[in-house]
Image (tube, rainbow, N blue to C red; front, top):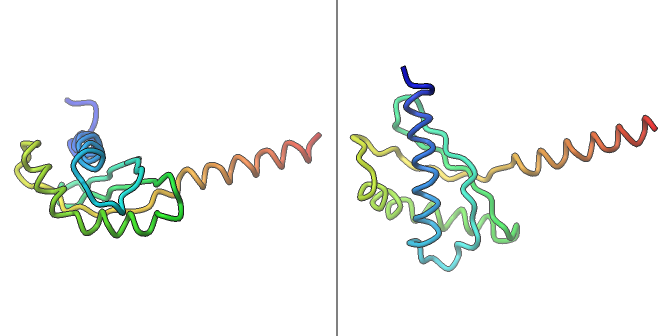
Length: 116
């Protein structure tokens, strides 16, 4: 048996391919420096939630709008590159995990300082 589920393997593959497409094929000027941090695919492989971070926080909402409008193009590029029976529907979301981690780190530093 394989070490992890098919949806997880598809998620990893989609993350790599979508990052490549966004960096090299999407020509929308609203898309700045984007990092695809994670892709979560439903167990039935119908929906792919793509989480991303944007280097310039002021451009974040504009980048999300641009990528959501380029969904069709990105799906067609994925269809050319991947051999999957059903290509998942793409949904782009902002990834808050880095900010959340920084907040926890600051709270831990504060606790350490108080304990000294």
